[in-house]
Image (tube, rainbow, N blue to C red; front, side, top):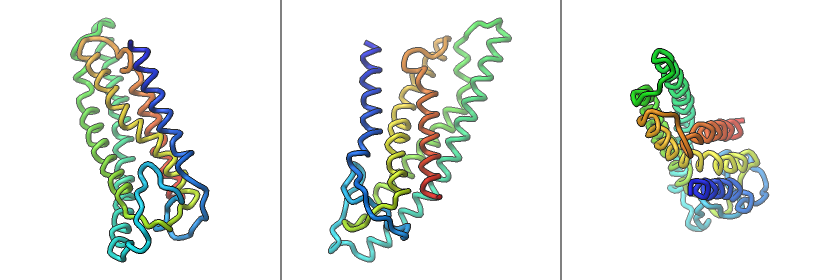
Length: 209
């Protein structure tokens, strides 16, 4: 049963990461950073007809993209902090077990309290960042630069990771509370989140440079 569940989640993750290859078309690059769009409508790309795209909507777009960029910087910093607190928590667990002669205990879960807080704040910041990027008004004629195409492609990696990873974290934390190491999908929490953070950093890098 668990193997079937893992296979379904893996298929979902892979399908979301490859969806962008069929939803983004090759377009002409523009030097205007405010015109970062694809020719075809993607999963998170709701367009507005050119005749309805007003100056007010364009101003809203500028505001949303600026907020998206600033929030992304904060999210990446929080993600690094969350990763650091996880590393410290795991080290504390190992130290506690060492003092107990290697014996596991339900109190091991308490070492992750700070990590749970930083992870929760990171998730809130992440989805706030995504909100500003997704809801920025878009005119039909606007096209993406090549770097923004890659920015979007990487989003199809880090977004599934930021959704699935925390769900697996619940299983991992519950296992610690039961006095043993993470099992099943709980063991996948760390590699999935590392992949998500790497893709998030990559998305920020290609957008900036």
